[in-house]
Image (cartoon, rainbow, N blue to C red; front, top):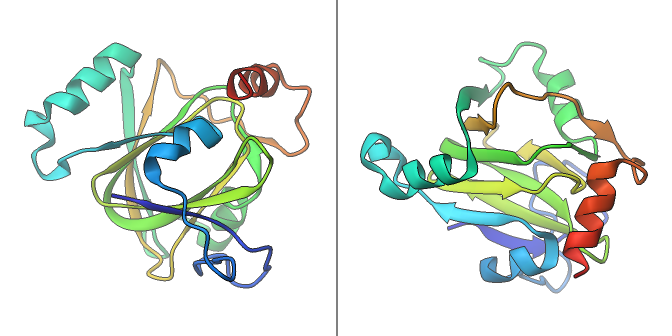
Amino acid sequence: MPEAWYMDNSFEDPRSEHHLNPPQFVPIEKLYDLSGVEYWRIDVDNLEKEEQYAALKKNRGYDYEDLCEVSRDTLPDYDAKLKTFYTEHLHTDEEIRLFLAGSGYFDVRDKFDKWIRIKASKGDLLVLPAGIYHRFTPDIDNYAKVKRLFCGEPVWKAYDRPADDNPARIQYLNTISA
């Protein structure tokens, strides 16, 4: 199960934990209320028999998937890609990631515009809603293998902050403040 906490404002290595002092943990069951982020625990070693995963894909219309392996050995132009992943942005579609191996951090803005850091690892499936400001970085181990899911053809467009006039952002803010 992932851990989540409010982040400090340090500009040091983004792959570090970045806890506040004292740490302020966020219970996973509160993530949805604070940010709209959803979480499931999936048995990735038996994915073909994983009923919850199959139902989730069917019910939400996830009909396209691929793999992304984030490591210096597997990701071309690694440092530039990490910089792109770690730039605060939003998407007009949900971002769905299932961790098959390794670990990393998704940083998401809560409804009060504060950073929550989510440490995800093998078996964690996160759904970030369309319109949420977020970013990603691997942790100090520099390795994450994730399955990316999409509804239809993948949309790869990221809108860097500020994108407050983006319709997905406006809809997200209306939904999260309700």
